[in-house]
Structure formats: C-alpha cells, structure tokens
Image (tube, rainbow, N blue to C red):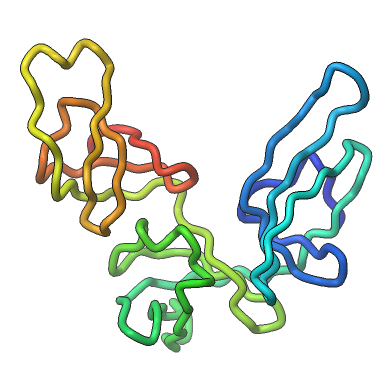
Length: 186
C-alpha cells in the first residue's frame, strides 16, 4: 500500500530498499527555500541498522502489509516477553530487541497489538495511554503547586516519568506511550 511521505508515523513499517524498516521518529521540515520534506529515522528490522532519510512531499512510500493480532502480555522472563493470542490462546515469545523502548509500558494482562509480517512478529503497538503506579517520587513541597514545575517519578515498570509536584508515591497516573509524558491522575 502506497502512502504519502507526510503520512509516515512512528511505528509504521515501511518497505524501503528491499528491506523492512520500522519508523522511529519523524520530523516535518519546511525550509525557507525549496520544498517541504519529512526527515524520517528508521531501523531495519532484520539487521538492526538505523538510518535517517529525507522524503520529499511528492514521494510515495510502500507501507508493508502487516497482519495485526490482538494479544495479551503475560510476563517477562529470561527468554523474553511472553504474549498470548486472544483467539487461539497460543503463546509467543518476543525478544527485547523487538520491543525497543516499549517495555516500560508493559504490565501483566495488558492487551496490545502484535504486528506480523509473513507470520513473523515484527513489532508491537501499545495502547495510546497506560495507567502506571508511582513507586518512588520526591515529596511535594508546600507552595510549589502553582509554579508548574515537574519532578522525576519512578513507575512500577522501572521507567521514569516527569510528573507535576502534587503527584506522590502510591498514586496511579496515566502516561502517554508515544512520548512517555504525564497526562493526568488515574
């Protein structure tokens, strides 16, 4: 399926130069002179190499045909991350390299989408928002709630999220999985 360069989003799988590439970052650039373009950071799924490419506005990219499958994250162990297919209850093990940067948002029993290309897992799509519990945060200082300042807080999965001063240890918050930012209290 051909898509415009401006429709490329992080998480997309593109067929580019005879390989499958996962889009990591995109940046729309409109220089003072010349035409606009998309600056795309991609990672090759097979080899693991990264590249930055510029695609002009009139270019069309081939989006890989991906079969999405709803699965449930069960647990992680030494072999990898264990997922269960919601339809036939078969279990699948995915390595950490396939979940690059997304493991901090996985809680047991979380339903996610695993993308398959020719019956081979090539990546996952997390829900846009997850609810995580704050396990460690500095205590709030009285009178600093109006400044809009943020402090680091460690979540139950081990990631650190910048949260407002009023968020304390033990509270549950909603976190944006696209950029790891605080949304609100849950």
